[in-house]
Length: 113
Length: 113
Image (cartoon, rainbow over all chains, first blue to last red; front, side, top):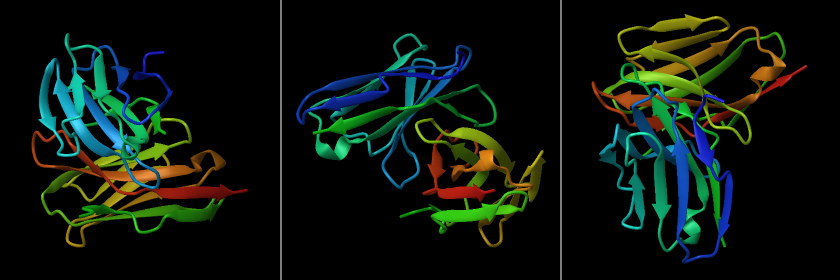
């Protein structure tokens, strides 16, 4: 499978716990994005990497959220001290340089109980 | 402030007929628009895009129309097929070099046999 891969597909965690998600982009794509989608809404932009550099962060990305892409390949998104409002689908996407056409993974569904 | 709006949460169309999905936007700085399709438990899949310098783009059964003066775009699917049943999102990008997409809330399209 050469698409964008996300792990895990589902995560249930207790409020206050930390969680980490992983995204493996399409191998030749140098741009990587994280989005969050809640029920009945479209995806909302969280952050963007070009290679290993994090170039843009949304104000939605509070201090409890951190994303990394240490070697310009896979990326991780960590949420510390999870809250019930963090329950959502977290989508990763990647693209090549050029016209913006991100390819999305299947997402990680987070449920905070 | 919802900059991209899809005012129809759902649409039902008979197989073989034309499906028209609509999207309105408020930000006149948007210069590139995309449509994505999403099946349950999958990430959004890119369908078609259009630059603001054009008013129409066609790809097989899918055509996107852009009316900049009305800040309105639409996706036409003809003929509609059962496999087109999905949630459709329009998205927009603001300006040269921007990497953030702003999505609408989505329209659930159901194709009836």
